[in-house]
Image 1 (cartoon, rainbow, N blue to C red):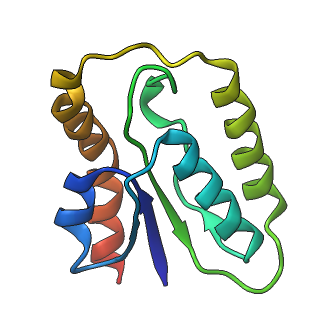
Image 2 (image 1 turned 120 degrees about the vertical axis):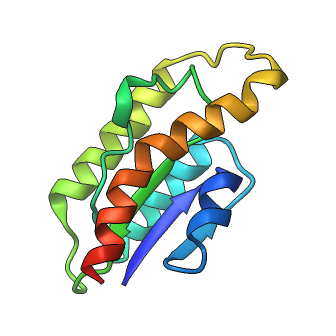
Length: 123
């Protein structure tokens, strides 16, 4: 079973009827840490956590798709999420205006929607 990890309410609302959505009102690092925890439980990254060229200090929202796997740890997924966390720690979060939050949600939704729509057709 696929799982969407997100802190974006637009993604949660749009896809909660078709996917398991792990939504949390958290920051970017919270999304990355939850994703890492799932990788440790045997999930495999299906999307890169730093998609779209949006730097970690340029958005509040992120959505990651994972698929359930065997009990074995996927080392490639672990490497990617650990490198993502290290990268995110290097960036000082810009003091982004609150009025941009909706725009950031729409950007994150637009980046993940093609993948999720294609995945939904496969299910």
